[in-house]
Image 1: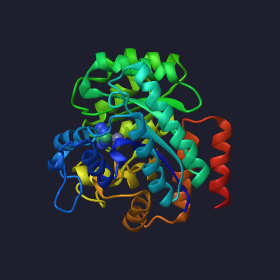
Image 2: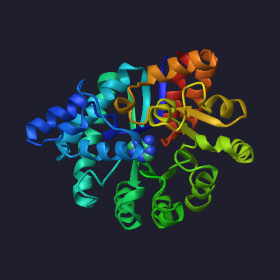
Image 3: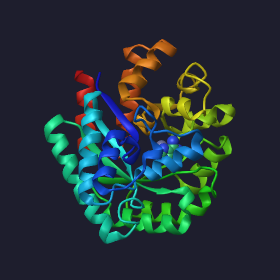
Length: 323
Ligand code: ADE
Ligand code: ZN
């Protein structure tokens, strides 16, 4: 089944073997972030963020990001993804320096064009600031986003530690991105409850929410999300692996869907959570007894909410329809 994925962190999708190989080439010792089987090793969200950042250390040049983008898209395409949006972090691509960012971006776009020619997978980029790096750094990231906004960089977002600061601290950056024509999403309702989602919607004026699953703790908010057509980028395997949800059965995606919220399905950081888009679809099918019709709805919702131009959206919707 073809799939549309809206929430994927490029560095978070890096296969551990790829990062290990690069670290070896560069003479960097990050062996502590891997377990005996060679997978990423962490305990809890705080450590996850540290391991994630350590894994970006060997990524030091635009060419490294070219290779990373090719590797990630090959994996996505192998699991049936036909359209993907990936969070890109100028923080890790030249320290949020605009000239450096443009070089990294050029390399990623080249890789994406080659992947599209080879496998048909379409990629768009969402420039993302990191909440625990603070509002000043976010402004530099927003400037990188605004200066490169266009057909390929189509969105702006925020990830990182949701318990650091508050959405209003980042309003300046989101205003700048909006004025540059970028579409907006924010991680919220993953580690904070319903108020974190309300704050992001009010203070950042985003149209999509990354995760948003803790909306389920406030049914009035759930109904508001449904009425206003706010799209949730739900990553069930990530939520289970990080302990946001006890297990797949307890995951609120089914209840959110049944109550009319526009939910979509993504992997977030697939190798960290031992998941793929195929795995997410399979687990959802077995957990909630969802049939092909439900997955067609999820894919259509994602395509309609994608931060791409209308011609690209029409192409993706057509591919979904004919599948
Ligand atoms: N960055 C990468 N994955 C993330 C997650 N699940 N939450 C917040 N920031 C992230
Ligand atoms: Zn995420």
